[in-house]
Amino acid sequence: MLSVQLSNALSVPVIEQVGPAGAAWLRMCFGVLFLWVIARPAIHSLRRGDVPALLALGVVTGFMTTFFLAAVERIPLGTAVAIEFLGPLTVAGLRSRQRKALAWPGLAFAGVVLLTEPWSGSIDLVGVGFALAAGICWGLYNLLTQHVGDRFSGISGLSLTIPVAALATLPVGLPQVVGGDFTWWVLPAAAGIALITPVIAFGLEMLALRRMTHTAFGTLLSIEPAFGVLIGLLVLAQTPTALQVGGIAIVVAAGAAAQRGGRRTIEPVLVADLQASATKETP
Image (cartoon, rainbow, N blue to C red; front, side, top):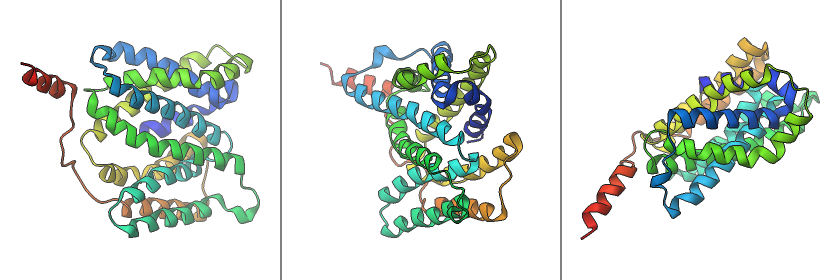
């Protein structure tokens, strides 16, 4: 979480040069380079049934980053994270066996209202819309990441999905890079940010989701809006009001309360397990 929010804050100067889509696309491109050096893509272990999930996760990852950076361009980082968090929180509520869990996304929405302060007339609806779109992608990303993480060992699944993310965001990212105010430092800056996210941060998320339930993961994830406010304050000098701090606290509390559970009861099915099973069943 700290890595994700730090990379988002550090992306702001790059966004000013090549736009949010351009910054997201460059991050994905450099992410491909790093991942292919660190973890060789497990192309030999691909099965036809794996392709839809890999493609879906790649597209969702690419546009989750693009939409979020577009939101950060318009609204404070902590506010954008809190709005985006409504996505995975709603997924957690819908997947819960208890109907009362659906009340928590509503409580988090109340916290978001305090954060955006619509009564002040200064709310950026376009920025909020981008954050909500990123939240939808984030909810899908969590579901798909666990599925892909179960199929591939380590971060080899990530090395297959980030190239898809780069290709998916190319039509919106490349025009902004070409038509933007491109300067020499943009490339090394984007490369450094890409090493943080997607390489380190998304890799850690995939490894975590292989060992945890969505609810346990979501419980820990609920403090991410607070990380967003902290990094926004320290890196971007975005000081929240007392009311906005209260809104963040409500979002975090709602996120934690919506989650129940711990370790996964079913061990992840890894590539090696599938290969061993297939060997035993072959006469």
